[in-house]
Image 1 (cartoon, one colour):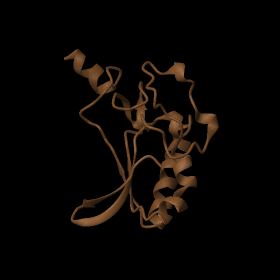
Image 2 (spheres, one colour):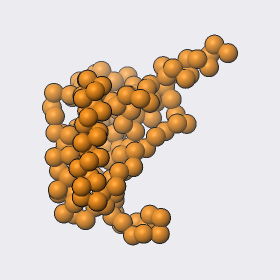
Image 3 (tube, helix red, strand yellow):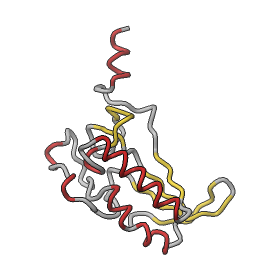
Image 4 (tube, helix red, strand yellow):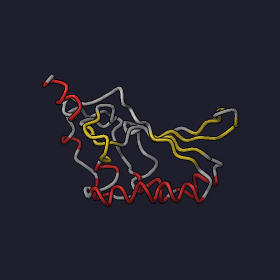
Length: 144
């Protein structure tokens, strides 16, 4: 467990868990989706050691800890492990889900369903103010 702390969220006390892509995820639930370290342009020393499947597998444990909010750092396709240089805001990073876009979406849906079954909310960090120079929005802006 990387970060478990108590805070106030919208005037309601909650216990939340923060999981950033550049930190170790809670658990590596699916080894077949791991990318070699060399495949990232910039490989951070605390790179990905887990995935969304690992969070799903340990959802009961998170619930037992009293966690009622999971904050996921950037999960979208990016060049770096931290995910703050988003290439595609509509694709989940393959190495934390699946190579298949349909399967990746299903994994995220399952995570949300499993969390909500336990009254755990999920926040996804959507970093619209950061984009890769390979992002279509950035590439289109170069034409103008």
